[in-house]
Amino acid sequence: MQEDLKTIRDLELKGRATFIRVDFNVPLDTDQDPITVTDTNRIEEAIPTIRYAMDQGAKVVLASHLGRPKGNRNPKFSLQPVAAELARILQKDVPLTDECVGDGIEMMVKSMKEGELLLLENLRFYKEETENNEHFCNQLARLTDVYINDAFGTSHRKHASTYGLPSLMSKKGVGFLIEKEIRYLDPLLHSPAKPFYTILGGAKVSDKIKSIESLLRHVDGILVGGAMAYAFYEAQGRELPEGAKKPAPEDVIAAKSILQYTKKREIEVLLPVDTVDSFDIGPKSIEVFQKKLQNAKTIFWNGPLGWFEKPEYAKATRAIAQFLSQIEAVKIVGGGDSVAAIRSMGLGEKFDHLSTGGGAVLEYLEKGKLPGIEILKQKPSQRTQPYLVPEEVD
Ligand code: ADP
Ligand code: MG
Image (cartoon, rainbow, N blue to C red; front, top):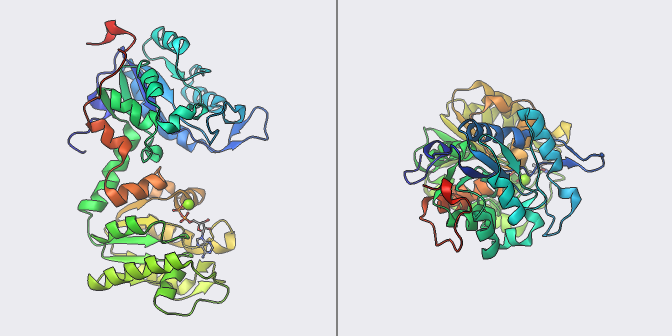
């Protein structure tokens, strides 16, 4: 673990009101009445941290955003369906508040007993959340004594709940989910077991170029599939397969710059040798990729190898995922669609780590840090108002 970063295990929680920023930004079926959660994965992933805090005797205040209500109190984005799921999983009452700040909430938190839970309503019902509004941060800071961030996927944002609030707190750290993200992602940037291969797919190279460049410092080779491969074809002056969409100029420029770097450093770049209707990499390419990957000690995979949402073009993504399931290597997947693809194939358990962050994982790989984690290492700036329950502060 990073030296100056505390984890939830390092903090005394007993009897303390503890704010846990979780990622409950789950997909919903809004046509149902009541609205239901269609994928509970994010809720389940937050459970170990929540359970631990409850078992330690904390008064647990959970907070998350959900969707983009843009500062409006839109009932479609209420965390009510999440509260229901949480109550089901934990077999415990999960009261949902109407507000996130103010006297009413402060009194509610004050009257909580050890091991009890409270879920604040959607943080983004307040425009102050994304604005990182100072007054709002101060109001949030009045609620609890301890701050835990376990929302990796939003840790690249400087929002009130991920940045302004923890900047005011002194007792703070990460939960188990972020701890695991760091444990698996850090070595990719510093000391991956070698050989280390990166599989790249999906659509846009230019969106990902900075994180690719930083991975290139340690990789022995990159294997490129998906629509991204065509930017590399074009960069090499090769003809595109029939039906392939012409890559955007900025993607070709990004591919050129990666090819230059890899040539200089003698890093191998494997491109597909055949495709299926240009929407998936073909059987020969799958074979070539598997051959290369069989001796790998570390593999980082970002981006599906084809248009996997269509079963006829999911073959390569599935074949490579199945192949990786069987080899001995540290296997890490980052990227919203790649993780969804592997989960939908039922292969999630076979990987060492499926990152919970999309944009966050790319930024972490690019910079080696995220604002929402860095702020947990810093001493607090002055609180304008003291924490509400002074008798509980040591
Ligand atoms: P991630 O979310 O894992 O970072 P991206 O968002 O970059 O991945 O890309 C995922 C999308 O790219 C998926 O919707 C997938 O269908 C699409 N895709 C991948 N390869 C192709 C292809 N050859 N043709 C069309 N779409 C593709
Ligand atoms: Mg995506």
